[in-house]
Length: 269
Image (tube, rainbow, N blue to C red; front, side):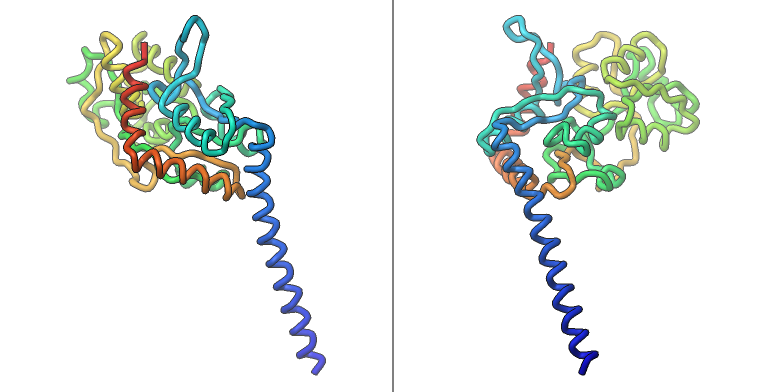
């Protein structure tokens, strides 16, 4: 009899703890959205050196951060009924800024890798691009495969998926990891590296806009689960993530993201 009572008490206590946990998680996620609405602004973390995703542009004499990621962030902010505030920082500091509540979300052409998923949660994929090797035009035939780049100096953005790919798939590569993509490309132009690993639309943009650069025929073996760009939020921000995914669904359904990519590409100086 006493054992039966004890089991009942323990079961009741367990249910209570589980209910409290659920409520606690719910309150946390609701507080994220409430905080944003009360502040009247959605603070986004980005690294504005990655045209056409996000980049600096002079508009009416004022330095402005633009790009198709920024337009997507504006659509999310509109759904929340708030304004966008942009926090520009180095790419490898974005996840830390999210974890320390310095930003509400991160949108910066970021791939939802398994390693990053341990620290933050991700939205659905909103854009998928391939990873390319950018070389000097004179070297395009010379560096036509990943094997041909073995042992060479390779430029990558620090903390990026491209850095990991170059390290794992270009044998004995000598990586030069820099904070910003323009610096990586400059190293390529100045012959400090033999190639640069850059995401598809970014590589094509530099090849089109810069004399002396070309996209190599080299191909990476890509993990389909880690391709594409997604928006990162702090763990436990379910309500915010729900609103982000709803906004992305609307943009994808109306095929607006493809147009945003085209518009952003065309606006690069």
